Image 1 (cartoon, rainbow, N blue to C red):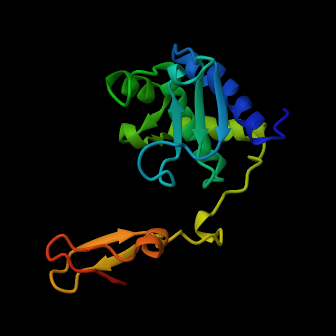
Image 2: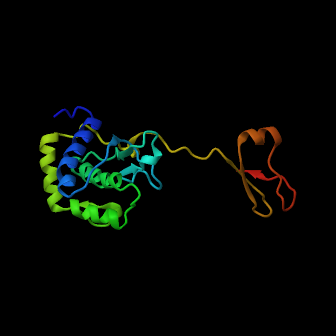
Length: 191
């Protein structure tokens, strides 16, 4: 089986899940596009393992699934892929009753927002891995990227009398001087 790229590996895994656990349980997985990349979802994108974008959000009306690049555990990726494929099957279901019914049927357990792989599904995913081979992906470690978080470019100006605080940029300070406090009409101090 050709699994030379991450995307090809994910496509092969999707086909195996489609023909296996989903078909056995009467579920039809629609066409999807797959990638390993940051999810672009709300909240902390480093904590989100996967995201399935609704087909209406795509110009070609095909669900797009993104799996986190900070994970290189093939079994965990397969479990997350299974979860996201349910979102592709039922794009408007969220994590409600319809999602839960399907998730439990295919072997996912736990809280529906962060499902875990049940024992029977885990066995099937392990068998799939023997055919798929290793996941051609090395996890990203954002904390070790060497890129420091950009600090603010704003300069703090404080009124020495009342404590009123304003932040501004160097350009405005150079052009017009420090801001004037609205309380006492005095120039504010730069920090």
